[in-house]
Amino acid sequence: MQFISKCEQDTIEFATKVASKLKEKDIIVLSGELGSGKTKFAQGVLKYFGLENEISSPTFTIVNEYHTEAVSLYHFDVYRLEDTDEFYAMGGEEYFENGICLIEWGEMIESILPPDYIKITFHKDLDNEDFRKLDIELFGNATLPIF
Image 1: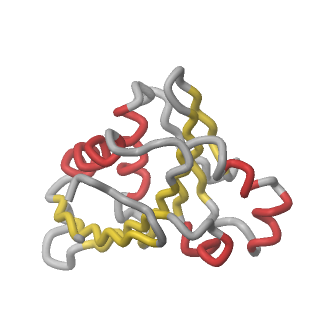
Image 2 (image 1 turned 120 degrees about the horizontal axis):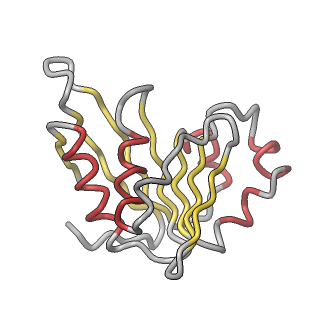
């Protein structure tokens, strides 16, 4: 599956649509080079849950936790992890059972993820700096009923 974003707002709106289908224990791996739209996507997910003013990049904290009456959201940035052992040491796998997980640079820990997850890979367009191609892959029994 694929989505073409023509601007940051498209990415946010697409993420909001995706968020409307998410449920507890869903995991979304966000992959792609720096500046490709991963954090904008996370912003859209948080917007759906009324947390748009709460977004901050978890670059230096590894994970930001957001709690609403409906759901808990965990926004990871695992770019700075040395290896999967560091993720285990911080108790990272416990988050998978307790809410929705958005994991930027998630390909770095893909080998230890539960079998069911969604992976969205962001690609910059070489001809138009505002365009992004988002490739969506479903692993295991993960579903995303917007397609």
